[in-house]
Length: 80
Image: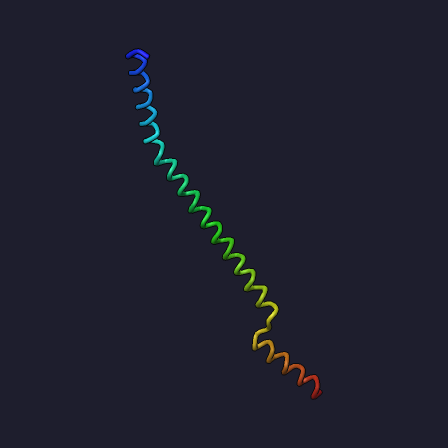
């Protein structure tokens, strides 16, 4: 390698280094945003699953008011 080739190699390496330094923050920002989006999506899915479990458990267990009203109705039917 002669002097001109070495200068060209150094110049190309420096140019690529600067390009990497300019692009690196953008790439890191994109990676960070995707990670945050994934975490938000997982939290929303977990919340939806939890709400689905709550609604299914509520439908199978009658409330106290429902239980009391059904008891009153059955007593009226027996006494009639």
